[in-house]
Length: 268
Picture 1 (cartoon, rainbow, N blue to C red):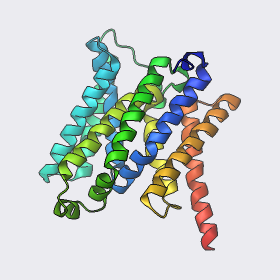
Picture 2 (tube, rainbow, N blue to C red):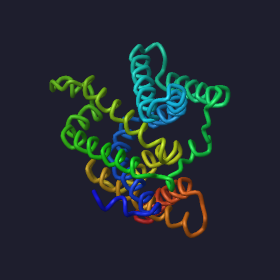
Picture 3 (cartoon, rainbow, N blue to C red):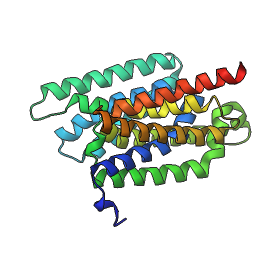
Picture 4 (cartoon, rainbow, N blue to C red):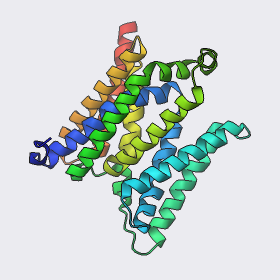
């Protein structure tokens, strides 16, 4: 990878965006199939608290992000399993509580300086080589896991009871998926922000769902649509001086509405 340090900030930002878009295809598809969109929002909101704790403890910010994301994921799954609260209620409580706590810490503890707009929209144009290597490593590990366990992830997503009858360790597979999500959110949020990572996980798979005839087709199309949104949004931000993260989200949304229009025309 000796060629990476020669890249300027625009190329580094594009590599980071494309790296996240490619991974968001399979992960986002699984999130949609499992109806876990709000779960992603909750993890995303919890990362502000992770950033603050990392600064307070003077540790690597990624360590703080991963630790808080994992803790929130564990609490979420544990509470949902109790069945005395609806899953959306638990998600809402934790989502707003962790976000509010992070905001309080960010504004009241001396010495902490977090640009909240940067946290929300990300600052992909400031991606450095360390961030690039983190993204590439997370991409590699997550894609290897998804490739190796894809049939099991798919089986437990389609029908948990049938998967149990077939002898699959459903709880282990679910925990593996949730932990992987926590790591991806932790590493992506610092770079691209809450808005972009949640949008890339939800919008391209939603658009791909309109055309796919198999789960694998949906994953591939979701990654392609996400990559197109990143590329076009990135160019729009450079040409028209738009904020990069929101520009990518808008392009992803345009792709989604184009998919609706295309399918409607095909049925007309």
